[in-house]
Image (cartoon, rainbow, N blue to C red):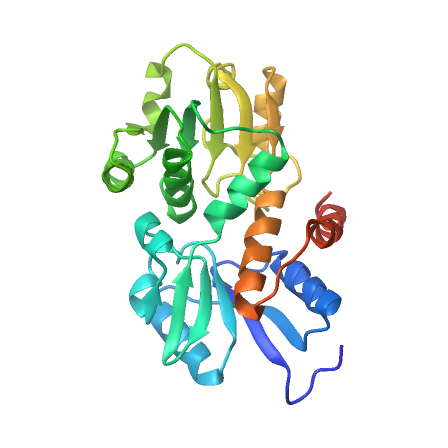
Length: 287
């Protein structure tokens, strides 16, 4: 693609962003659709999110993705927030509107499409969710609205887990999210769970870590889904498999949340055939 005076720009803001595969998704799609568009990562220092969003708007940047740790912090910087993103309390996609950006959350639908593709269901499930950050907040909301029976939300800081649980339970009108301190995992009921790992522990380059490393915990998991996609097999996934469970990484979630963002920015619909071409490139890059 030739970059010229008509080239549109999209990108990713977060800290860190050096590991991201999002440029591969969006630049591949731009090539497929013949769009004059480039996507680049923008590292944003702590405390400068508002400046970054205002600067992007001033520069005419078409859209932005938002990653850790700014998915909630970015909300006050926006002109509008989609109702779903407002309910979740986290935004990962900004779409240009008059005077700034409108915030959306494509993580939730991206994760649901990824889990469905792997044959994982949420309805009626007893679940464990590790972490209470922006991504986990979206996951908690997804589990609640898709009919999970009970979700134990484990976080190092109990009050943060309690806050997320209160917000989600109030939003969906039932007590489905149950907050717990991470250190209290051994008090979980003696049964098998679907577990989602939503923390940054295990993310490249700290690939030898898991937020819980006691194998007794993993003997309670029949299926584990790690939102991390680098490395291809996280320590969390290894421990799930070692103890008899099935495990998946977050690459398909990354794929589908990115596709939904691209559709919002460009007013197009990406087919499943096109999605699988992009996934093949992502998988090759990671594995």
